[in-house]
Image (tube, rainbow, N blue to C red):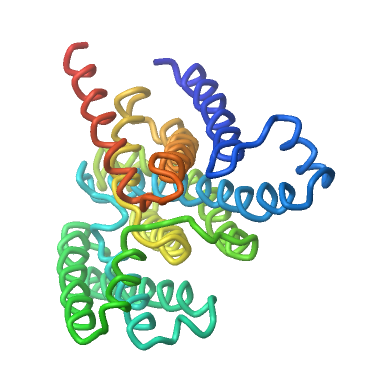
Length: 329
């Protein structure tokens, strides 16, 4: 598919996804009610639902979905591994450990801001550990060691989570498990602002790394010969993509498959040129998570399914279909 055509289709799909997210839910609204609420007119209850509940939730879905997909594409480029994704490098394990710890101690119940801060702090610890292990004496970043360090660090944090849950009450265990399944419920504008403060600058930086990533795909020696500062690109790509993932995880919990499936799907559609692939991954990831969140709210309403479950149920069949279509071509 031509990149321009794909981009136009994704923009249209994102607009449709946003419209459905605002329109559909336990309470449905007409187009006129939605327009009035956006302008600050009409029923106060309708205004509150549209502007303070569904509005921030929709924007956060775009930011987190786009960030996870973009991070996944960058990690796959850096590690040259099609199975690489944001959570395989221990980032989610660190975040989950921080979140589960404050939930089990009952600290998160006192202040709502403590949970995302704890999760973000846990992610930073995981990032620091993996980066320290993968950096050798000459300050070069060994990407093979980085992948192994991420897997091992993730396993260590999983053991920490199991230990904490073993010592926790049943109610705390339920809260922790629900958080680890991922959810955008209860999103507020301050949370959206926090995630945007990380995601938008990180997105710009990673897209600017597209050309060096294309050269790295050829080989590090060739990229260096062509003027790419290989080590700087690897460190910058890893840290920026990790921070963007950490911000998303801290706000929503662990939402799997987006960072793995979306980059693969877009690669099958538009190829491996990262100048095209990275921005399209952000659009596709935002669209995908927005649609998944809408489905999670309406599928068995008024019960809400964790969005991480929906991303797996929707994403895996869609990816397998794309893979089969590519094999037939």
